[in-house]
Amino acid sequence: MTARCDLSPVWAELQAHYAASGRGFDIRNAFKADAGRFGALSFEAPEVFADLSKNRIDAPTLTLLLKLAADCGLEARRDALLRGDPVNHTEGRAVLHTALRAPAGSDAPFNTDVQASLDAMLAFAESVRRGERGEITDVVHIGIGGSDLGPAMVVQALQAFGRRDLKLHFVSNVDGHDLAPVLAGLDVKHTLFVIASKTFTTQETLANAQAAKAWFLSQGGTDVARHFVATSSNTAAAAAFGIDTAFGFWDWVGGRYSLWSVIGLPIAIAVGVDNFRALLAGAHAMDQHFASTPLARNLPVLLGLIDVWYRNFHGFTSRSVAPYHQGLRRLPAYLQQLEMESNGKGVDLDGNALALGTSPVVWGEAGTNGQHAYFQMLHQGTDVIPVEFIAVKRPNHGVTGELATKLADQHRKLLANCLAQSQALMQGKTAAEALTEKAPTASATLDRDVLSRHRSFPGNRPSTTLVLDALTPRSLGALIALYEHRVFVTGALWGINSFDQWGVELGKALCNQLLPRLDSGDTSGLDGSTAGLLTRLTAA
Ligand code: F6P
Image 1 (spheres, rainbow, N blue to C red):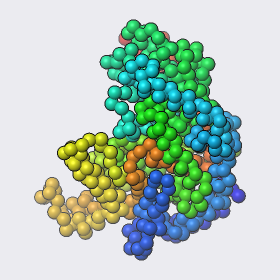
Image 2 (spheres, helix red, strand yellow; image 1 turned 180 degrees about the vertical axis):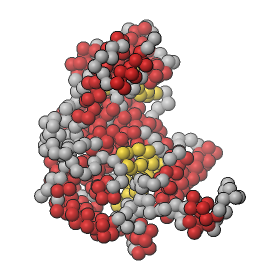
Image 3 (cartoon, rainbow, N blue to C red; image 1 turned 120 degrees about the horizontal axis):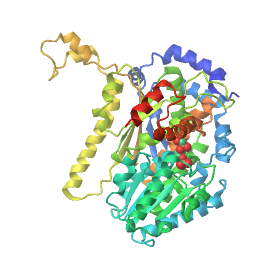
Image 4 (cartoon, rainbow, N blue to C red; image 1 turned 30 degrees about the vertical axis):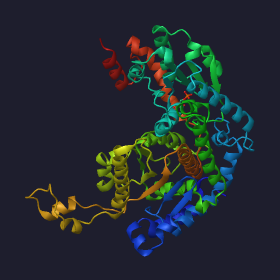
């Protein structure tokens, strides 16, 4: 068994396979050669249907990738994760976000503690929703990174399950332009602040929390203890801040995996207890799929293997995510932290420098907006960028009458766009085909052959389409858990620690050193660029 996939003998087999047929693989020809391709390469997981058939893979590729997973002991590593072994070895911690969504009474680690913590958080959320803490109309959630992106993304995605009379605001940036407009127009009597920070030491969050508290007092607010609550694993620091009500959690919950914990408080306030539990149940269903489905039909495993195929053999350095649902417009930002903070690593578990590429750049925008921005580059640019489409079959616009009819029609347009983009990326258009077409805006004087080359598309650009029947708490939970496990799979194959984030530390330390210089203007000992910029920014 080889822990790092590039040291496995199967790696060389994959390299040979890539040279023989992977490099020149044409998805269009693969469909022509195999009428059953869609059926063979589409998969069902809880709440998520996945069409992998528009990828540059075939049965021999998958067979070899699965052989690689077996040789790297992927199942044993997955089991160690789920069992609670200290897989985050640089911090000596277990990684047990899956335990947070295990049902009451299950044999998942820490189940009694988890249920008690969940019950307390949900009871508090209900008390806010029922008006037992005064008439709360606005909840301002202050946190950053994993203490912001997950809750903010989920609350936005589940807006249809929220209440119009209860508004959730998310403030993350230390830039006061984030907090100021949120506070403007709020009434202290009807506002609840949730300060979310695993460590309760994060500069941005503490600065915003202090500013919010000062604003609260300046507006005549008197009961800080009633209007400020914290979600943190450092409840002592929250108490020192003056917060009585703090919901704690454990060091085995990573920040970017924490929305299932008390960090999910704003979600529970927004959508209520039953919907929060449904979110957990959806994630748990995906956990079970990941834990027990044979690797050849295990969706997070298959997605992770294709990621390795593209990153390390095809050399694709980026992946674009295009959710065709406006509610999921923050999903790409959430996935950026999940994937790039987890797998943006340069050494293996033993600290050896890696000779293979790790996390791709993950980016994207909701469809159809992205089509009118960067899809040009996806279709005709010189880089091949695999795209992940997310389509939702049934909309939930929450309207009636004529507007409902109109929006139902718009939903068909949305789905047609989603299908058309993956079709266009794969199909392409030859210059000869372009030559036969009349282009309405084409120059009348330009040579037709030249024009046809501008108007051709290479095609053979890969994509995956994930389909949800509806965007619900349960399906969203499953979708997020799918991504979490996929990130684990690629990290495990690369032989890295996906659960630490030392790469954020240097910038934090340098920021602390530079901060006093913003007052003094002192540039001594700084490099020329930093000194020049500091002078520019501090000059009277
Ligand atoms: O950006 C680094 C990081 O540590 C993330 O991993 C984390 O999600 C974020 O900062 C916020 O940390 P905390 O919840 O401790 O405020």
